[in-house]
Length: 382
Picture 1: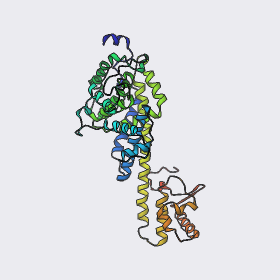
Picture 2 (picture 1 turned 120 degrees about the horizontal axis):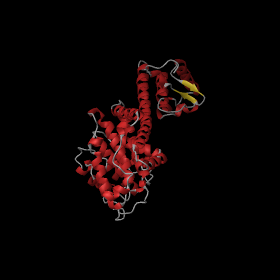
Picture 3 (picture 1 turned 30 degrees about the vertical axis):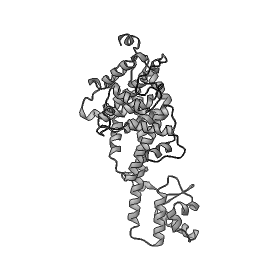
Picture 4 (picture 1 turned 180 degrees about the horizontal axis):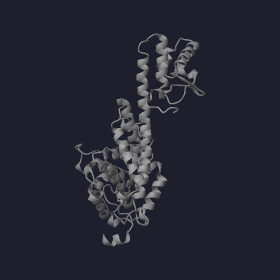
């Protein structure tokens, strides 16, 4: 490969990540802390599964979209739940299944190549993504089509295997090893990001670049004892910032080929997505605490007005926007049943009682509950 090393000077297996600015390490530390917190956050079982499933759906959908295959999130969600959305394309379902099967973690008893950080492991990923594919797609075989000539369009096909082998060796080298045990997850994320960038530069296969990189990145995380959550965050972040991702990938291939700016961009973008996930979790926790507090407040009363008012608050806490008064009695089947046969005056009297008690708010758009009254350590004036 010496002749190509003399001409492909931009693709070097070297990064001065230890010299990255403090802001990068702060962002990376925030990401790792956020991932650990997410893994241990207390939620009701159904809500926890919904958050987890939504992250997987968005991650898988983003990977497919980066490869040019756009599938509705609902179709992917239906597939994950074991259903088959009417009208969903069989090809789309097959590609979702193929990608998910490459994310099997270590210790699952699956094919040992699912754990292998090697060129053969990469070939296994590609073959799994495209079972029964045509000879033109060459599942599980290196690309034989010439590159476009620009650095970010792939290395010459004659040396794909050599560059891929060097990448795998580099990812397992002491240079990218964590300096301490408690830093292993942070360095696993760094290795995942470098694998993403270099695989897009090398382009070892004819098709499926994004999915191959995503599955291989999840494998890097698994080696460090991590699940695929960070890989899904990265997929969502790259798809959302696709134009910037393309610019960063091209920019890193120019001049000294320094991957550090890309690492900084990717970690910041992943943190942005993670903050959204945490915001949803926090909202679910607040609503759960609100329901518990509400049931405690009303536990001593079981007369008709109490049952109606309690249900009003429970149902209003389950929606995100204010509800007009005339839509309150039909907000849920439970409310419709409770207010069947009673006058509008009764509904207004119940609402007035809740407003006077300070547990309900009237806004221009309608009525809503104020969940912030359950927050501890609120700043004055906040």
